[in-house]
Amino acid sequence: MDSGIRQLAEAGWLRTAQQRVWAFLLFSAILLLVILSDDLHAWLIGYLPTVEAIIRARPVLGVLFFVLFAALSAMLAFVSSAVIVPVGIYVWGKAASLLLLWLGWILGGVLAYAISRYLGRPVVKALGPGPAFERYENRLSRHASFGLVLLFQLAMPSEVPGYLLGLAGYSFWKYIAALALAELPYAVATIYLGASFLERRLYVLIAIGLAVAAFSGWALFTLHRRVSETRS
Image 1 (cartoon, one colour):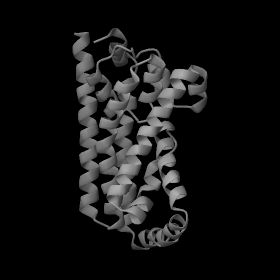
Image 2 (image 1 turned 90 degrees about the horizontal axis):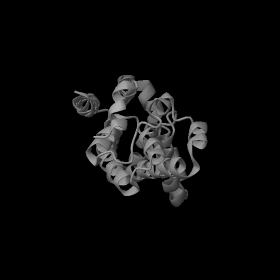
Image 3 (image 1 turned 120 degrees about the vertical axis):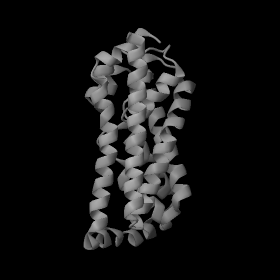
């Protein structure tokens, strides 16, 4: 394993990787609180028929907006696709929403990679991918193994890996493969979390939230162990 990857253990990456776990737990907790409030849940759900009517009137634009918003959420830390997932499920159902969300996240990763690879560091920093980028900048090598990159993609906030791997000149097709594999389980979990919110399935929501946190924690632990092993 290359020395650039090993330096991640010295760069404070562990704290940043934990953000993905805590962010999903926080999102789950917010949904849980809304579900427990009859009035708030009914008020939010009451807007869905109006939104559906707007989307049905412009179906292509509705799909494009959903995919592009999902793409932005994979590129910018302050944008979350969670706000549009319940709308997508209500309008298109779980299967179609899952596909659109997954494609949107992949598109966002591709754009982040392309921006970093071809426009360079100044443009990436202007987009503000967060302090994680500055900590990891120039620490990822194009020679990193696919397995390690996949773990990195699983453990890190989604807006980080594309910029870093593009800047490092990592193989585009290997990056896309790692991106697609890593984002799929999170997309599935996000869709079913949104569905449990719409259906007010309290225990399902709690179970999904804990399962995703455990999965992210496993990825983080495994990545940390692999990096530590290379240093021993």
